[in-house]
Length: 155
Length: 276
Image (cartoon, rainbow over all chains, first blue to last red; front, side, top):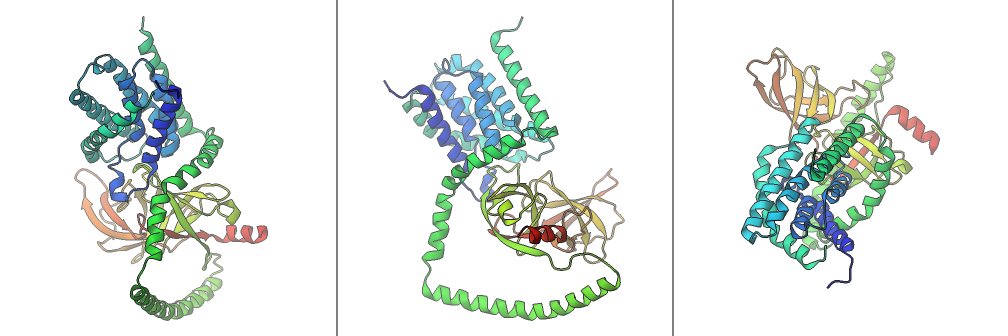
């Protein structure tokens, strides 16, 4: 059993997600960058639903707002709503096989990006919707990496 | 009545919405943003390491023949620009004389400061860049930013050693422009696409053609007049609308330029001189 407290492990996983979120990309590829912070929190909840509730999502959302320079509450709202879906599903997903988990991961990243697009649109910010399905698929490609990272830590 | 889970979602969603409204309509979180920006600096520095290493490699591992070739090319460019400058300085002097005759107070030569892009916004929704000049260098909120080709945007947040600039393609940005050919005025709006701007409220009878060059008109007092903004690349009549859709390709290399110019308008130049 790990001697490191779960909160440190969560902070470690979030730091990795933040770094991945901030790494500079060419402008053409920027639209295809997954929301790593959301993916990491979703994965953490799928692994340990009993340890993390919606407050984790709210804090991660505020963190994402600070990183993306969006209005406070923008990502927080997206994360809390996604977190609600994850928390509802997590009782079943803990018994799911990998393939079903990948499907849940895909659906959640799609829901997350759609919600983000809707909230952005309500604020007058433009969101290219043509990216959304591709973005969800790219998020799924990162599933093994994030899954491996989270399962090895005591989050 | 409600389960604790549903209650928690509702409370947090309402809290997020409240924060969103407050942040959009007030400036209460401005001090928090300043602190967050300072805390984020080391993170940006770390994430820029691979990019900086690549650039360093490109600058330092170049063959001699390539350097000689580049040097020749730069010498030729200098020669061409010097030739053009001779003609321009003559025109500028003439323009100044005419302005003095008209008692015009418009600034002819803006003071500029060279700056470097240190990071770019990680999302496509916000088109912002961070530059390495701040209040210590005299930068101020609203200051225009240019690259070698045209207008890039304006500073929206200024810190001691760095500043954040909003690009003209951000969907919350609009700037007054005029057509170089005939002086027709309009407003160029960003639409979160680095390669496109849209002209707002252009009537179907307006004299705008494909290929027309657009310059900043100077109206509104934020941007100085006469800087290149873009070129008209698409005109389309929209059925049922009283206005045309006009698409503009920005002159500035918004996604590529790494060295930019900060323009000091006349008032700010005077303030800066007195400060220094």
